[in-house]
Image (cartoon, rainbow, N blue to C red; front, side, top):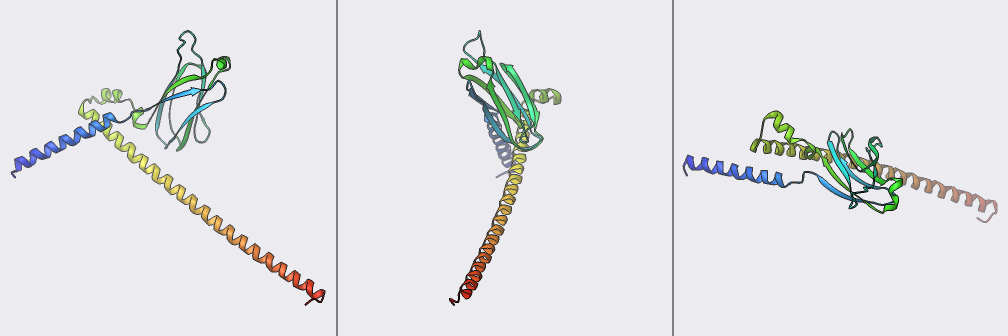
Amino acid sequence: MSGHDKLRRLVMFQAVLLVVLMSALSNAPVGDAIWLNVPPTGTKCVSEEIQSNVVVLSDYVVVSDDHGHVPTISAKVTSPYGNNLHHKENVTHGQFAFTTQEGGNYLACFWTDSHTRGAGEVSVNIEWKTGIAAKDWESVARKEKIEGVELELRKLEGAVEAIHENLLYLRDREAEMRMTSENTNARVAWFSIMSLGICIVVSGSQIWYLKRYFQKKKLI
């Protein structure tokens, strides 16, 4: 095989690989669309476990067949430590955006307002984006003057970095859970040893007491 044929096959292989990667990226989900049926009384919540330093962007809107009277809701978003990240009342739509400060379970809760509770369930459409999906690629393209294949490659690079960071986060969580499990096992082992020691001491004390009792009664 000549050097020209090898070069041509290498170029064709790289082109096919690039097409496959771009296709996978274009077919990948860019966010989660969630439908919630908020009951007349009570609260409906959605949550997602997110690592630290991740951008979160979400839009929510009340969907109603009665365009003349759209029911209002209240929304509240809290961090794993209970910090209030977003709170709105008497709204039909809203948006929240933040960068996570700590890893954990982020919670978004919705409930109907008091003057609309007699109207039954309220449907809420939520578009939840995190990480690479929340990035404004149009602004990036305009700012850096890139388009086409170069822009898709930049998206792919961002997706790979997000996957790598997520793997590191999962590794840290696994190490943390393993350490917690080992500490729990060590505490259970020490508790078992202490319980066994207490049982031995109590049994010995009972034998000693019964022996003295029988000796006093001259039964032995």
